[in-house]
Amino acid sequence: MAIRVTVWNEYLHEVQSEQVTRVYPQGIHGCIRDFLEKEGFAVQTATLREPEHGLTCDVLDQTDVLIWWGHMAHEEVADEIVERVYRRVLDGMGFIVLHSGHASKIFRKLCGTDSSRLKWREDGKKEILWVVNPGHPIVSGLDEKIIVEHEEMYGEHFDIPQPDEQVFISWFEGGEVFRSGCCWRRSRGKVFYFRPGHESFPVYFQPEIQKVICNAVRWAAPQAEIPQETYGNTPPVVGRDSI
Ligand code: ZN
Image 1 (cartoon, rainbow, N blue to C red):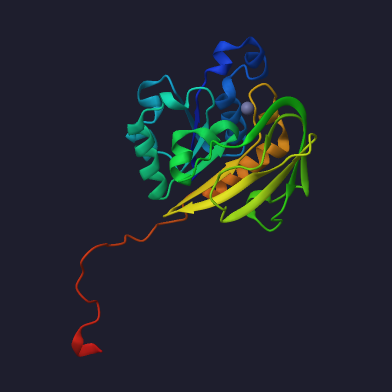
Image 2 (cartoon, protein in one colour):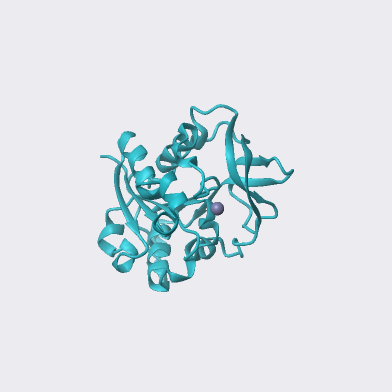
């Protein structure tokens, strides 16, 4: 069965800025949906201004991996929905946070640090993402580096918990570096942060960037059936007679 992906996008820049509309006429979520569908995933989209931000319990029931892009309206995401997504991640739903989603309520909650803190500069200069974990499934089929010709700069220090696995480190023309591909596990769920994707540049149309996101969906998807654990006060499994 195909992995079921929900692409969540704030979808405000594309509506409010002609420049961004020209870059992403279908919205950032539409671009991501299209290349994921070509890869054989079952994809739906959800946006901020839909009821419950498009993230109803039914939608999340049908989601193996949730992808998140947000920037200017993080505070408009209702706490109730943040809590709902958070619970799903702990229960095993994969979660991929893109670019400025670093400052979203849900990513900050999953991190437990002030992950909104980093340096930035919208200069449209070059970024090189270096693969620092060549055996990792997220970089399967890639070269040792990805060059993005025009991007916004993000620089360290990035206030995240130490990643469980570091996949990319970026170099920027201004001299900064950044941990641009980071993996964590949170209970049964896998979380991947991937830095590229400023709304003014057509970064999500770049094949290598698409490949990373497709690989990350496969990595983050829940593996088979997760055993049903029991918690709390419990009788012994091994009886006194059988010891
Ligand atoms: Zn940006």
